[in-house]
Length: 179
Image 1 (cartoon, rainbow, N blue to C red):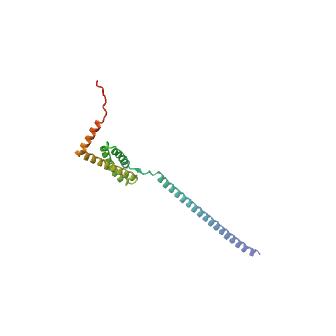
Image 2: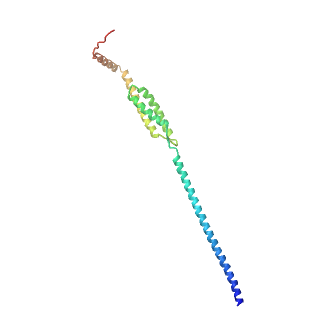
Image 3: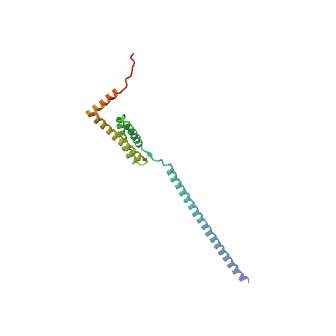
């Protein structure tokens, strides 16, 4: 019997070693698989973190971007256009309104050109100033032509002088004491 047990112990030992080796391989495979899963999870987390950081940078750039500025020429064109129109409509200031209107036209054109540049707005403001300035210049021109025509018409001047004389005659006599 001793001889039958010997080989059985040898077989049991080889089987035990084979089983231990199989268990070690299984443990190593499990460990490698777990390690691979941890690395994949870490990689995904790192990519997610980088993506989040990139999104935050884009948001910061967008929020910190300077707003577009309105062209100074456009703003002045509008101001000059309104001022010129008001001056011309007061008639007495129409010569000054004519000059201011011409300046408004020039600034309106400069404002439209400036609004084409990146980061500068004000095309609508420039157009509004340009339109008001053109209207003021046209009204001032019409007034100048009308006044010149009226003053150069001798019949109209005579009528105006007669009317002034009639108004003088209708004034009440005032007793003004003399010193």
